[in-house]
Length: 237
Image 1 (cartoon, helix red, strand yellow):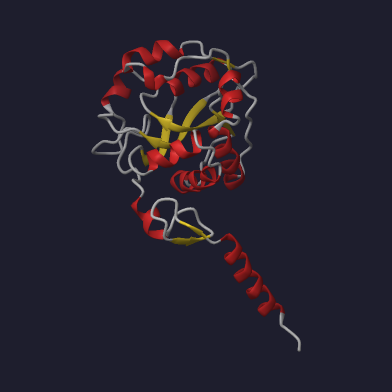
Image 2 (image 1 turned 90 degrees about the vertical axis):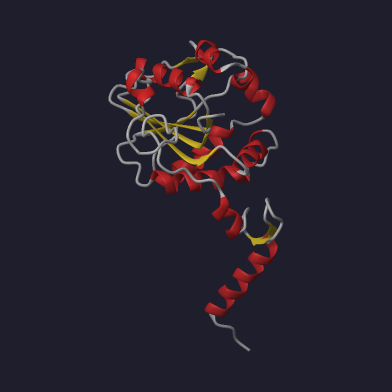
């Protein structure tokens, strides 16, 4: 008894689905080979109207008053989600729980938000200090950036810049102290003249860390720096 190639491939697909079958991370419903079931994916808090420079939610897509009055060193920001439930828990699961598969989910969602990413020459993950990297074992921004590089076809360079100061965690500091905490935290010896850079990170809160990193990249000649972040904290956080 012979079997057609189409039937063989169909059986192979079914076997793969059975082997990869899992429960949704959020509701434990069957989700096949996906981390989240379709219902939970639809409930993720996607961003809406926001300032194109700092990605802070607002009533329109025009640059906010804060960015006009005190322009940051970065030129644009794009966030896939609002930093709220359940995205906050998923980011914590990646960052502190080592759930690296979530990096792929975040990258795909961010890629959908970014679109064609026209004009970007290079993707750079926000670097961790070596001590923090050794403690965690991986850089969550680099894991997301790897997938984004494959999806966009844009080269990624995780060694472009370094974090040279092991700063106190930003979450432990009041907002006004965060910019001072990050001052001269990064170094970049590469010549970036004429290069447009997209910086990848998991969460953007005040933007102080990304602002200092953009300052470092522009000192090395970068003509434009964009932030691609998984989530942006709302105004009142």
